[in-house]
Image (tube, rainbow, N blue to C red):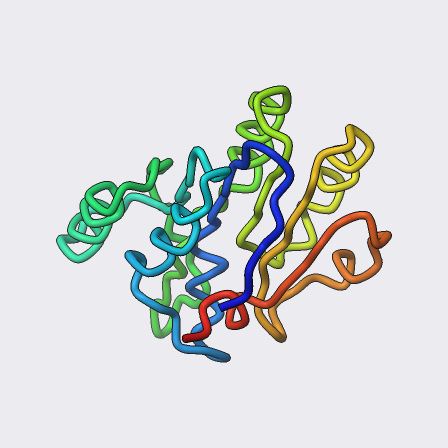
Length: 168
């Protein structure tokens, strides 16, 4: 496993819909392994897990497991967007970009480092702000799942592939 060099108290923010989307490139490890990886760092004081709440039993069981493992779960109801009428195809939608940004800014003075599990380019303005405030920014992504905007950032941050962190 790759070792991170953290600079002070660290907040980990996991955008699970993004991470789960990486399954076309890698096998996503059980959430217990992910939690254990980050909780082994004494600097990681809080590990937040963002994922939509659905009414089906599988979703309810998964969210219960997330809390049982030890994550701080942040959730909101899932929306379904019609993609096609015939046949009727609904797409599950539940973005947490705003919640993750707000949690980061609310906790700005409490942490020296922020780890984002998401390759989403929408976070680039937040990353730039954090770097301007001299915060350590670590972006965890997977190959083929990182926004072009992230690659174009200055080298004032650190990025690594999820599969490198989770290697046996």
